[in-house]
Length: 82
Image (cartoon, rainbow, N blue to C red):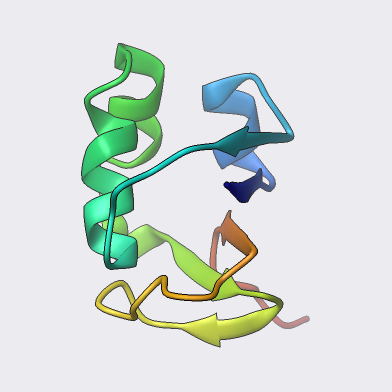
């Protein structure tokens, strides 16, 4: 089981702040494909990966990062300074 967290507009599009899922995905990209296939709201949230960042167990990661041993995946938009 992996905890998946959604922040900012990702949370708004999906309608959940977090969920615990069972997945066979080996990489973050495979997890995203599984989520996209669930419902239209997930497809909309993950339509443009260039506008998303991902963290695995609170460490920034890439979408091709492996999920082995990961307990938490967080999706969020890039942070902007100011």
